[in-house]
Length: 326
Image (cartoon, rainbow, N blue to C red; front, top):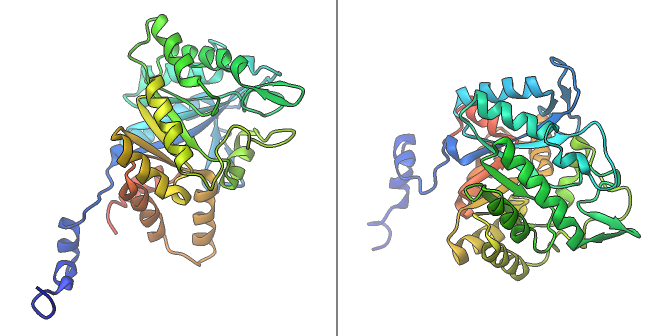
């Protein structure tokens, strides 16, 4: 069949027809909202993040209130990032049982039905800003694993449903899985930042949580942007070590990686639409160069590539304005 018998425009002629024939759909449960909780920040004084318009650092109480509000809009999951008052070389406050993340998790599990996910890393907690233990300005992989395991275990003890190691140290999934299982948390899910690239799109986030490294960069542990076969190997190793969900980060610039990992492994895939991707779109909208429709288009592209879950700073806006179709 060909024109004039076949007319593809028949399938697009009304909004209702386009809606029922949409091959890819966004649902509220697809979204995970990242939240920044700052220790000892006064209630009612949330701090606007200048590099991320519309995003804030919250006190613990304000974060819980905001999470409740978003849950009422249909949000199912949050990803918690902590900002401690004190930092040291090891990042020891990251596994403090009374730390900002641990306290936030307990409150959220007591007061909401949200799926609570915690970021497991050292960068916000170390005085040097790197994601691992440092010796002579070199990131020491194996010594870092013990710290990461302690962080993950403390989050599980507080009630986290999912722990999400974002450090990109070799062997961290195995170390965390073993420690969780030995301590009776064999049901705690691990969502691995499996393919986390050394991306320039992270710059606004580093300002948001004050985690920029004080020397060097993270290119020896985060992935090289030109590589996709390496991402497949990272994903395979994380599955072998016990990861339940794999994440690709960033999202929009790495749609091919999302697609490749999903097709290869058939496991749940999360993708992180990171701070730079968010801020770039926001800047275009605020300048009048783009319309808000680009938010939907960017998110549907991530879902179409194969992501089951989308971590995005646009989640509240998306839910509030019911942006589930174009």
